[in-house]
Image (cartoon, rainbow, N blue to C red; front, side, top):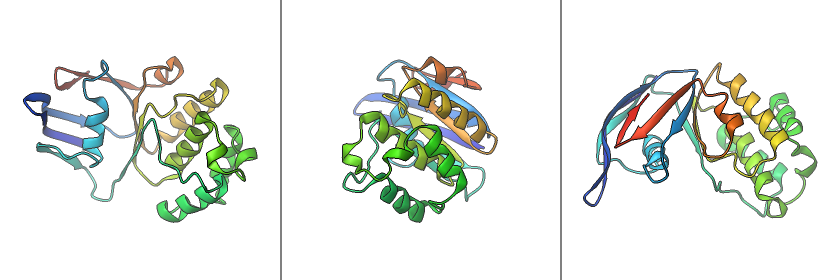
Length: 200
């Protein structure tokens, strides 16, 4: 499980998070819901350690648990080919580029034919697919997908939602999404960020 304890974050005099206390349970697909500007992205950048918190704690039940954050504009080495980027990511994150699961995912979301092309030639949606594959292949127990599927074609998105659904048997997902009803259909829990608090 993942515990948020009295998280508080201010920007000047504006209180963004008001002593948030919340427990996220394992093997769930959380839909994180709230109006634009309420702090959904900032909250999960705090949880992943990208943004510092003013006070409070983020506590993982097991010290070895890790979290992977994937946002709307993933950083990719665009001079590399897709194949080279997967090989680099495999070395960094501890998976094999020859893993049968990886090969299957590349086929299912229609990126395999483009893996020998340089990433700079990819469409926006194709770059998103490549970044998602790396996220899914990571060893992280918790994965944050923050508008990470925008620009992806419907057929691939259907397969991605199925990958998420199957993967949730062994990991937890946090999805911030404004566009896809298909993604919303697989949420197992909905959590709302309102007035600086998380509520169900």
